[in-house]
Image 1: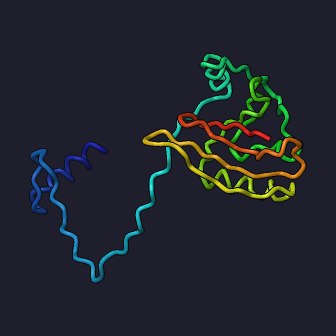
Image 2: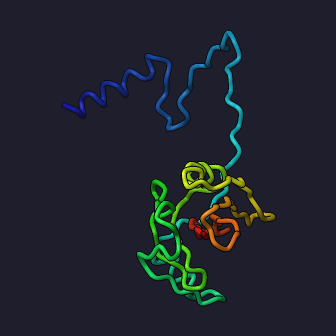
Amino acid sequence: MKLLALVTSLSLLPALGCKNDGGPTPTKAASAPSEPAATAPAKPAAYARTPLTCAEIIAGLKGGAGGDVVTPGSWGDAPKELQVVPPGGELCGASSTRNTPVIRSALFGDELGAFYQPIATAMGCTWRGVAINGSGDRKTTQVTFKCPAKTNGGSSMVHTDSGSEFYYLSY
């Protein structure tokens, strides 16, 4: 039955002004719109970093120049208020050389700052802002805030890796 329908439809092609020569099918010309279509402004391309698993991040840090060892599951010296992970992120562990958490996350730039600003403000910290540093195709985000409870007087920082989707959280 299906074969008969196919043969019938193919036999109607010449009657409809079409030919079955395997060439391109003619298309109806589109009518000109009465008004030009509005186009959205081009959004700048997001800075792309390589997504990795925590196991890959830990192995990469251990094999790097500093031979950093990450203790899985540890928050290092981060205070309880900063022991949060952004949506889609994951705590990999604490760096042995910095005693700071290493967090896998795709957040970068203002998105990373927007995640940490309310947390830092709730801790009584002074927000210092977000900076994107680097040159060429190597960029990092640096989020800084100064907290009164910090004993050494320094600023706290969230610092992304330039090539992979993770960051350090230094308090």
